[in-house]
Structure formats: C-alpha cells, structure tokens
Amino acid sequence: MATDLLLLALGLVVLTSGATLLVRGGASLARRLGLTPLVIGLTIVAFGTSAPEMIVSVTGAVNGQGDIALGNVVGSNIFNLGVILALTALISPINVKLGLLKIDAPFMIGVSLLAVWLARFETIARPAGVVLLVLLIGYTIFSIRLAKGQGDDPEIAREFENGVPGRLRSVWAEIVLVVGGLGLLMLGSEIFVGSAVTVARAFGVSEAVIGLTIVAAGTSMPELATSAVAAMRGQSDIAIGNVIGSNIFNVLGSLGLAATVQPLSAPGVGRFDLWVMIAFSVALLPMLWTGRRLQRLEGGVLLAGYVGYLWTLWPK
Image (spheres, rainbow, N blue to C red):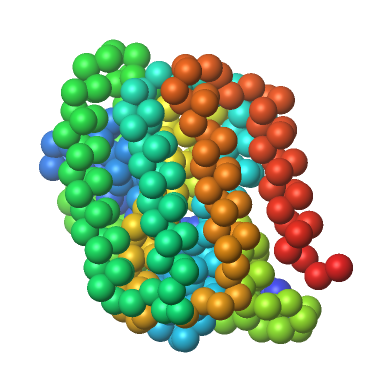
C-alpha cells in the first residue's frame, strides 16, 4: 500500500510538471506566432492546464476503465468550481471585467448538459466523441475572434500581459518544452491511473469514486496553481477564465478525445454526480451576469458544498 501511495504522489508530480512545461512552451510559441496574451490566456493556458485531465481520461478509456475516464471529467469540473474557484475567492474576492466570460459561462452549462445527455446512454460512442471535438474547435475559433475585440481594454490587456508566460529566446526550446511536457503527461498518467485503481481496490471504494475525487483533484492541480497565483496578483479575469475554460475543455476535449479513442462505458458515474456538476456551473451565472464580485463568504459556501458532495460519495 505504501508503494502504491508513493506511486500515486509520483504520478501527480510528473503530471503537474508535464502540464507546466506544456503551458510554458506553448504560450511562448503562441507569442512567437503573433497571438496576444489575452488570446493565449483564454486558450493555450486554460487548455494546457487541462492536459492532465485529457491524458488521464484517454488512458482510462484505453485501459477499459470508463468510470475513471468519465469520473475524472465530471469530478474535475466539480472540483474546479467547488474548490479552486472557492479558494480563489477566499484569497481575493473576484470581480470579473472580461465580458467574454459572460458568454463562456452559459456555454459551460450547455456543454455540461450535453455530457449529462450523453451519459444517459449505455456507451458514449465514437461519433459522439467526434462531435465534442468539433464543438471544441468551433468554440476555440469563436473565443479567439471575440477576444481580439476585447483586448482593446488596456486594463484587461495589461492583466493578461502580466499573467501569461513570456517568450523564450529559441524556438527549439519551445519545441523541447512542448514535446517534453507531453511526454511527462503520458508517463505521469500511466503511473497515476494505475496506482489510483490499486489504492481504490485496497480501500474498498469503486473506480468511479476514485475518479470523481482523488484522480479529479490530482489532475486539477495545474488549474489550482494558476488561479491561486492569479488571485494573489489581482488578475481576477485570468483566475476565473482559467476555471471556466478548463471546464469547457474537460467536456469537449478530454471526454471527446477519450470517447473517440475508445467508446466509454461508465456505469459507476451516476446521474447525481452529473447534476452536481450542473448545479455548481449554474451557481456561477448570477455573479457573471450582474457584474457582482464573488465574495469570500460565497467562496466559503462553494467550498462547503464540495465538502457536502464528498460526504455523499465516501462509504459510510
């Protein structure tokens, strides 16, 4: 058991390191290609921090562990809102200025509802996965075009300029970081998923519960680090944009690619878990549409909601 716990921790470290390298190299390469920090922050950074979820879900799908694959996506989205966003608000109340996020939040709810609908079937088939990936491409193109117009606000532009990784000197260094990051992600996912399943069996809990909790929390560590640092720097749009972008990418990218590679069957992930994901997503809307700040008290309520959700999952 001790060895499996050490492997679980090692897998998490390797996964997080891979995501860090991928974001660093990808952001620098995007700057070299002429993309603005705002566009990079809403696409490369948000998607790059979600790379562990994608790799782990694909690994679970390939290994026939559908509960791990889907549970990781659903659990990560719940963790992002119930823990990362909550802790971010506790560090510094969030005041969203970027209007694009008011469009992204309803879209996040929409893709979450799509995931609920797909989970109704016995298997999430390859065609469904392809549709999710096509939606991701369309969403990314739309975000880039809309973000270019919003980048005229000097305050928002300055926030993303300071919050997005700078450009490296050599294009080869960027390529090495991207390739190395992907390699570490694949290695870390194999270690992390394998040890997580072993630990689940040792503690007598299902793979679905492990996917919804330990695996989901572990793969969300890059988002936690990005949003926490942004909150401490007063970069609220980056903090919340990272969470929303990650949740959208988890459903369209992680679930989409996993189902495309291998049709998913996840009987252990119940409707309750899926609707909890929807509930946390809906709770974010009032703050974004009214322009109100997410206060520390509201962050505490979100965190308490997540603790309550964990209580319903763990064996009594």
